[in-house]
Length: 399
Image 1 (tube, rainbow, N blue to C red):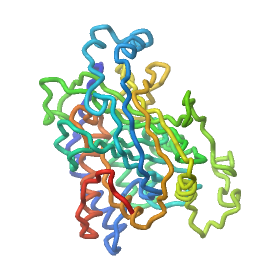
Image 2 (cartoon, rainbow, N blue to C red; image 1 turned 90 degrees about the vertical axis):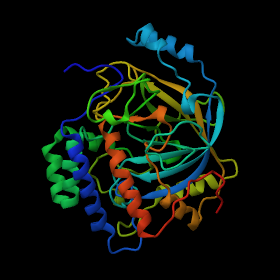
Image 3 (spheres, one colour; image 1 turned 60 degrees about the horizontal axis):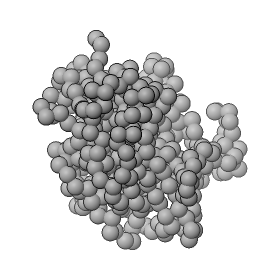
């Protein structure tokens, strides 16, 4: 079946897998935390730090972006003229306070030198506008990004198979990965980098979001029939120098990490493998403690410009030569002291979800639809475990 641009398509038996995965997630959380005082997240488990920042949305030139897209892509004048870029978070030039949660991607807490993805969850505050029904906060927009531009699981059915194997055992997980070599290779590639610092790392959303909703949009149809949007985009945060002209900062690996993938990293780094390696938390604390500390990322959006740039299959990379990122803002983090126990607890208790935000930025694609089902289950489990009453952050928090 040929697919249309800006359209998400349901997966066969999709809603059946919702229920199955909710039960698996509950089982997984019980297996890990039933007899413990505190429950952590089921994925991106290891928090490094909660960091304050400012996201500035620029007064970007919408017509110039459309002109560039017309030159570099196959989008027609009609398609481009029907897209309104300045919506929601992007509607006005403005500075927003943000909380950032830096974390590792694995299902459990591991040493930082081990292969893994690294994430930056961005909570933008004081955001006005009509909200998604699934939102659990009233004036925030969550953007979850990782240091991999793609995800390693293709479908909801595959995610159910993989997660069921994780719940069963390490041996079952290895077996599933060996039986799905393309996705195993994507996992290996996505976890291959060990960056020098998470404050100079590039991050991508890997999954897509709508930019606007059509007048006849019906949320109840998603996951059942194809649903079309005015435009579909992905996000990225690209590290740049703090001073003009804000040149891109190239990737640097953590010093001492061997190039051979299966080399003993603890030994190469001269570390005791029996002791925890919290390299990234230590780096963030020490880097931001410097009085002149300032770190910046360009905030960019990338348009789906061809149906081959899949919305549903997040293992398919949207190549920048086919659709470039356009800078629409800048994220800045400056000097701050963050080594407080209460601040770490705040970080642990924060909720993040692509479904917490404005309706015009609706998450799309099968992995995002799955997140909308699973994330609330994990958040409720974590908070109920501590009898914690969640409060929406404002940006005014001090520790």
